[in-house]
Image (cartoon, rainbow, N blue to C red; front, side):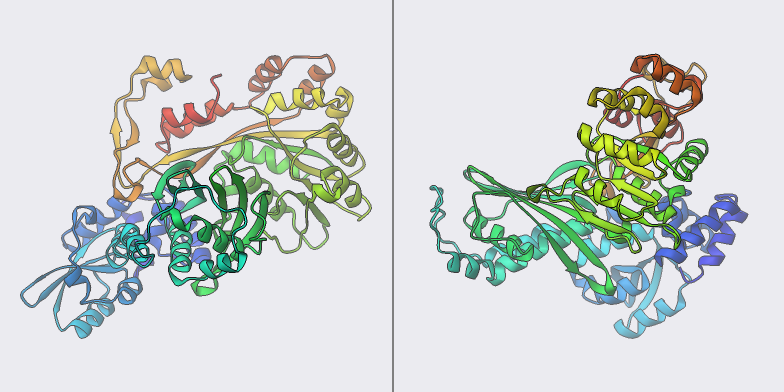
Length: 568
């Protein structure tokens, strides 16, 4: 907003946010270049709706809910998309010589004068949230993703579709030519760009006998996107393989590659591409790697103060092991990268062994593993130890050999960060024991174990209070006192969250500092359950307990926490 500072001051004065929250939002604003209102909403300090209502009352301008508006194409033509993007506004309707325009900042006289000059109409501003305005611009000016796909598909022609078995001896030159056809190129580009717009983490292109399906994974859940013409499955697969520098002639073996997409404003998006041959053709899965969204500030990952201090203590030690555990897609890589970013200083030599390297971090020596030529985690670790390292990061401890080298590295004056696949922090110790690592080596080397999960956040635009059942809450793990909470929040579902009631994700952490008591218990052969009980008595919050605090804080709901955590 043009008067971002003034808006912040007004919100603090009305006690809608605290001064500390304003300072944090302003700091975040300087980093990402967004406006203050959007940043405050993104950080969860205030909802878009609350800002909109406040501005409406402050400037005596009507507030509108853009979700309820059917945008008129004739009115949209009066103001270009570029102007709307520039001024954070969208034209809604015309009444005589007046143009009703939804604005994030109704006091922006420069925007009002600009639109008046371009259209010749008098501008009557109404207030809407900037998130809703952005969504309306995308919805109105792109005419929706479906329409965009339909326009492209019309260019494919109406030739009869053949559902027969593909010719394995298909002409590669013809395949290359088909992959470079304008409609194919445009469709693939649209699939990639729409995935970025919708905040997808993965794109699935899946061939079946009579259809080709594209799905996006948004906030950890797969959603249908579209069904391209089946006859173009080979051309679409070839186009993606060409972009990822893969062998389009090889259609019987899995392949892995990478696509780098250059966007406006110097922004780049990486797509990690995996091709898998199925009985009906090649299934392609692309992981979106947006470096601009990589959160490297540990204070913003979702840690509570005490667990964060424990984690910072562990990575601040001159030697030892810090282990992060959780299922695929739980944010382990982000946590490790955040730790490395904190440790990345001129006087520290950091080497990482990754499979694959997801993000390129300046100042850190990152090595891509290649099992086929013998470069695995164990081999990479051995080589690192001859490179005068201070900090080592191993993508995953999968076997005894890797575990043994990592433990020895931790005992010889190196800080080792790594991941394991276990259900919670205490079971990580059992996993190492089962691999064959001696108990005394574990107690001597492990500083801290962190387990984490990602739960979907309640959409800020449609969150609504509800009264939970106290008995159900107690069964879930709430204390008697916590169960007396009069109301919790849930998402009602709106256009901004595609009716799901969720938008974005929050991390849940279980941080087990390996103190002397736990070390003694490991040496005495204590079970995982005994270790967990002792850790909780020592102050550790379980994943379920961390989730319960997020529920009470209005960040997520019981069903989500139940989905990603085990009962305690």
